[in-house]
Each structure stands twice: as structure tokens, then as C-alpha cells.
Length: 200
Length: 168
Image 1 (cartoon, rainbow over the protein chains, first blue to last red):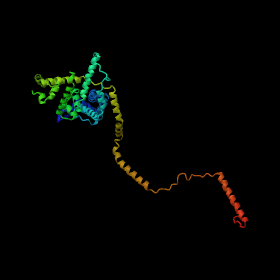
Image 2: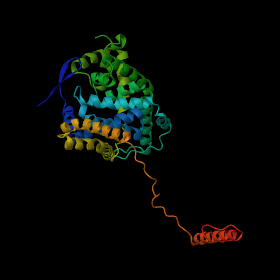
Image 3: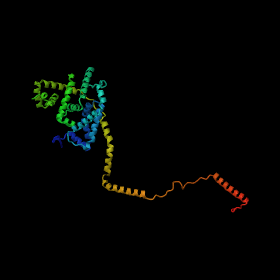
Image 4: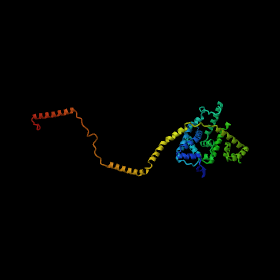
């Protein structure tokens, strides 16, 4: 039977299946936790990677996210969508890490040439070396452009673009109003349009 | 419709339109405007370029041992939290009995401590004094006998000098 929870300004929404899984985790069902991990492992890890732009750090933070989810199971209440809660934890950890200035090494690595980073293989046809190099240069440009955004704008863009979140959900994750999110996104994309214009 | 760029209203429509996420009715409305507005057309074109550039950025896949490491960390946290639960289950029914016993035991402990502290202390001889046996050397015995012999001879000498001895 589908449960109902209050969300936002008293509106009642159907409890999403992830929240139902989390409630089972709360009741001691380890298999439900494994399902949630399987479903969101990649998206959380990739979100964090794009936030901190360091593979090792992003996986460490992703582990911390799921560890906190597991530890909080006893007190979990489905007051919002599960993904809102999940990405709120992830964003909080990423913003804290960035704020603590632990990203100096990662930034340094980002500014260096990416010769040590292996180019990703395209599955169907082997691309030429020139094509791979060109692709890598474009990706580095994108990475630098995203890294240049203020932390909160970056988080908003990543949730909007890659997680396809609604403005209202991003607002809940970032603990701000929906109009503030729209403003954040507008400014962020404006910066990206300027920085990536030469890729046309 | 009013130009979103000029009015700075519904700018999210432009973003969503460029991403192909705008609702059909709004998309149709905006499309008609974009066909006539050069600024909005330029905006949409530039935004679509950003969108496709962002799509090229694929992160590295998550490590294969991610889950193993995570469950390892979860297991590390478990023993400390399991033990009290086991104890609670085992001793839970006795909890009501424990409550009055604890202050009673504390009171008894205080009484015993008081008695022990205020009781007269028995004089206890230093350990080992009774068992101490002085070792007498044969030389010492011989020397004592010599001394006695010497005293006797001295008494005899005095007797011969005109003073008779009482003992002899």
C-alpha cells in the first residue's frame, strides 16, 4: 500500500518507492539498502566527482554519503523525496570539502595538462589519435569551465543537467527558494556560455 | 509572449527549452517567440552548445571494490553497536530487579567502608620478625668462651693479691 507524506507547504505527495525502500532499511532489511546503493551509487559518485573533480576524493565522499544514509536509518522519516535527502547529504559533504580548502591539490591537478589521464575508448569504432586528443581537450575545457563556477552554482548546474532535477527539488537540496535556484542557474549557465563559446 | 530576456521573467523557460525539457504548451509558445526574437534565438543556440559540451564530460566509472569497502566500513561500526543490544536483550527482563539492588548495594558498600575505616587497628608485628633466627657463628661462641675464661683468671689473680673472692 502506498504511503503518503507531507511535503513543502502542506502538500501531500505519494511516498516514492525509494523512500519505501529506505523505510524497509529502517526495519532492518539489508537487501533494500543494497538496492538503493545499486540504484544511486553511480549518480552520487559522479555528482561528487564533478563537484570536487578528483576521483579518489569523490569516491571517499560517496562512501561517506552511503555510510551516513545507513547510520541514519533508525531516525529516517520520509518528509521529502529520497533523492532530495540523498543529494542533500552529498552536496553538504562536497560543499564542506570545498570550503575546507582541501581541493588545492585537485585544482592543481586540474590546471595541469591531462596527459596522464587515459582517454576514454569509444565502444563501437576505435577513434583516431587526433579525434581522441580533440575530445580530451574539449572535455578539459568543460571541466575547467565547471570548476570556475562558485560552489553553489556548480552544484545547481550538476543537479539540473545530470540528475535532471526539478527546480523545486534543487531548492530543497540547497536549502533556498525556487527563485534563488533559477537565478543561480541563469548566472551559472551565463558563465558557461561565455567560457565555452569557442567550442562551437 | 513577452521576451524573457528583456523582462528577465521566465528565463527558466529558455533554459528548459534549450534542454528540450519544457512542457509542450509552453514550448510551442516560446518557439513562436524565438522565431521572431534574435536575442532569444542566440540565447537558445548558445545554451544548446553548453548543453552538448556538458554531455561530453563523462566521469570515470566507480571502482569495482566500492561496495566491498563500504560494507567493510559499515561492519567496522557494527560490533560496538551490537554488543549493548545483545546485553539489553539478555538482561532486559531483569532490568526491573536491578533498579532497587543498585542503591542498596551502594549503601552496603558505604557501611562496610565506614566500619573498616573506624575500627581500632590491631598492632601487627612487622612481617618476618618472629621467624628471624640469628645465625651464630662458631667463632663467636669460641670468642665468648675465651672471654669467660679470661674473666675467671682475672678473679683468681685478684684473690692472690689479698682480696678473697666470694664466688670462689
